[in-house]
Length: 78
Image (cartoon, rainbow, N blue to C red; front, side, top):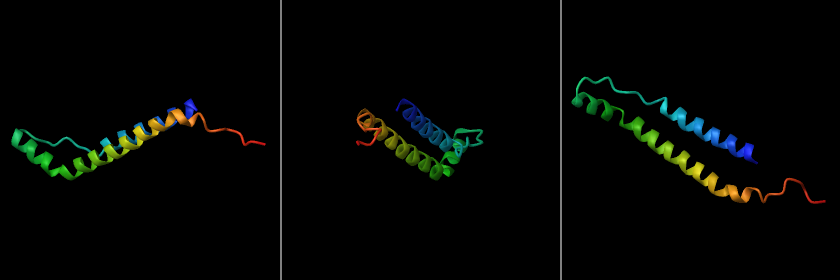
């Protein structure tokens, strides 16, 4: 089961990393331009935070079920 757990951790890590690809650094030369650039990206930042929180919640839930996953029989009883 350790390979399965490593695979699921990897899938969550890749999914969380792909979320970051849509975020861009605003091209700003002053603090007011930076604030305006971040305000323009507020919907993307909100979507990123919400998606990251959802994936993180599922990942933590997946980890919390792991101690009992070893109790699942791998063969059918005769």
